[in-house]
Image 1: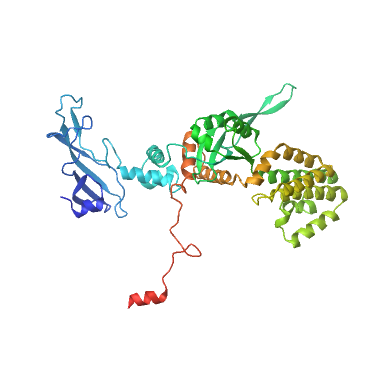
Image 2: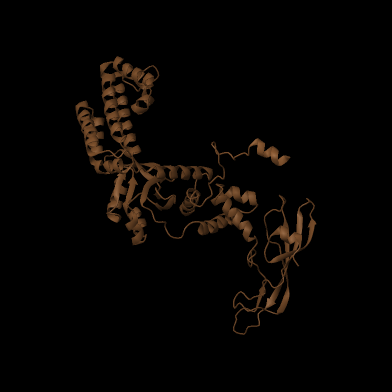
Length: 462
C-alpha cells in the first residue's frame, strides 16, 4: 500500500515502511520492494515464485527537504526455476536502483546534470553530492552520452578554429651551426568544428592542428552531411584551407574579417615600433606621443569621435617627420582596408568593392613601408576568401565565442590531463543553449517578469 512517505520520497518500485532520525536529526527511511516489483529474472525474464533469502542494502539518494537521507532497502533474493536459464538466484531491483548500485539513478542524474547543464566542475559536483571524483566523472559521461546527439547535426555554415591546450614548452638544443636553438617539446592543440547557423554549437573536436586530422573528421561524416555544407569560415590558416579544399571542394571558403583587421593592426603596430626604435634608439614609453596613441591608432576611424580622431592626426603630423609620417601612412592604409571590410554584410556590388580594393593597393604600394606591402601581399593571396566573406556576410564569430566558453571551462577545472575528458566537457558546455539549458523564462522590456496592474491586484484582493 502506497503511503504519504512513499509519495514524498518518489522512488518508483519501493515503499517506505518506517522513518526515524539519526543523531544529527537526518531521516532514516526503511524501504521494502513494492508488491509485484523486481521478481523477474534479469537473464530469462521469468517471474519467480520461490524466495531464497533476504538482503539489505543502503543506496545513496538525493537529500529530502534539504537533509541528508539514509535509505535501508530490505529486499528478497529469489530462485530462478527455469531449467534453461543459467542464473540460479537473483535479487530484486527497480529502475531507480539497479543491481549492485550504491547510488540511485536520480542521484547519478543530478550529478551529471550539475556538470553538463549547470556549469559546475566535476570535483565541485562530487563535493556537493558527497561522492568521489571517479563516480562524478562517470555520472557526467553517462549524462553527456544521453544529452548529446549521437549523429552530427546537419549544418549549412561550418566554422573551424583552433584552441591551444595549455602552454607550449620549449628546450634548448644544439644546432648545426654550433650554437643553441629552442626546440618545441609540447604544443598541443584542439581544432573545433562549430555550427554557425543552426545553433547546434560545437559539433566536435580533433587533437592536433593538421590538415590530415581536420580532413579525417570531415570524411568521417556521412555523404549527405558533407553535401549539405555550403560555407566554411576559417582564419587565415593554410592548414584549414588545405583540409577544406580536399574534403569539401564544393563549399565556399570565407576568411573571418576580424582576423584581417587584426593583421592590419599588427602591421601598423610593427611600423610604429620600428620607426620609434630607429629614431629614438629605444622602445616607446610614456612621454612619446606615438606610444601614447598606440591604442587609439588600432581603433577603426569610422567608430571614433571627431574630438578624438582630429587631435590624433594633428599629433602625428606634429611629430618628427621620420616618426609621424610613416605611422600616418600606415594608419591611412589600415583605414582603407577597414573601409573595404565595412562592406561586409551590406550586399555591395562589384563596383564598390573594386574601387576600395584598388585604393588600398595603390596607397599600400605608395607608402614604401615593408610591413604594409607585406600586408597587401597577404590580402592579395587570400582575396578570394576575403571577397566571399564580404559578399556572403558570414563570420567565424561563433567559433570564437565557443573558444571563449572552452577556455572558461578549462580555467574552472584548472586544466585537463585527459584530452578525451576535455573534449567531452567542452562539447557539453558549448551546447547548453541547443539543449535548452540557457533559456530564461522572463519577459518585459528589461527581461523581468511582467507585473499585473495595480487595479487588477486590488480588485482580486477585494
